[in-house]
Image (cartoon, rainbow, N blue to C red; front, side):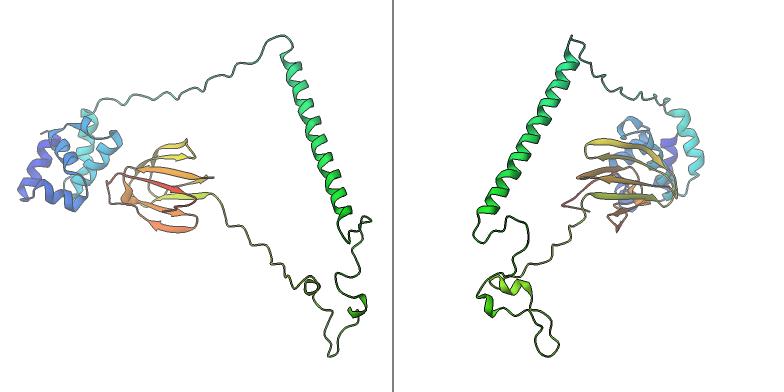
Length: 264
């Protein structure tokens, strides 16, 4: 008996409609119809066909292993994907090309040195010309006011010297704030079954494939991470130490992006 007929007969024997099955399994109706009609090309991929069939068979209390074995006989063999080879950067073989690059690099370094040295000289001249400036580099003994009014002895009652900031117009410098952590740290952990996933980190594909139960992967990005989960209900998601749990139901396909500004 065909896979589709087995599924349809089991559903109708329980008096269920496709809408009711969709509500219970979270599998979209068009995918349920595709399974019952064996129109597997409608589903997004081989991994999704297996996942949806497994969940549908469990819901109908059918032998999922037998149906998956039949599925392997029906589906065409999966074509092996050949990774794209990055283009080879052509080297400059023109006569004198290497020497020109070296000369340009040395000239750039010399120019940067001159600019830095000149900026330091100008800053030194400006500091020396400021009122009350001390070119010798030693800090002034008194900040402001009449020298006779400044006491170097500790005050009565064991008080220490007055805060140096109080002698500068009452200004108090605040401690520098601790910079907030930057980047995105994502941990994907599969609790049971298997899940196909694709992960893109800062615009670069980092992982495409399946993770089995009790497996996990960690990804780090400067700006953003985009993920696609083929069976979102079995994947626990953690972002920058915050546990978000699962992003959908079993067999549900979920796309989500996590960035520095909007995490989760």
